[in-house]
Amino acid sequence: MSDSNATLPPRYLRTPEAARFLGLSGRTMEKHRIYGTGPTYRKLGGRVVYALDDLKAWADRGTKTSTGDPGADTVLPAKRHPPIPYAGKERR
Image 1 (tube, rainbow, N blue to C red):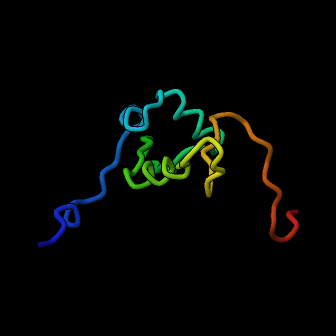
Image 2 (cartoon, one colour; image 1 turned 90 degrees about the vertical axis):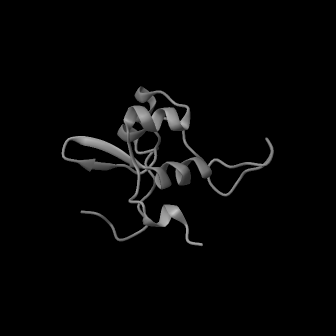
């Protein structure tokens, strides 16, 4: 028996739908885009869309087993964060 989802095209959600899926507000999703702390998104024309797989992967970064669990990664809040130092060649 084959997976029925394998034949379906990827599902994309607009900002309000993606926010509801994650339990966030649309404004929080906009802030995440501004600060670069949110899930990967795509621009199709002037529309912002999110793939379900990207939303799930972003949310999974915050998976913890207890309050003391540092986890493998973290989901940052939707606010400005200090820039991460560039690890490659010096920029000019």
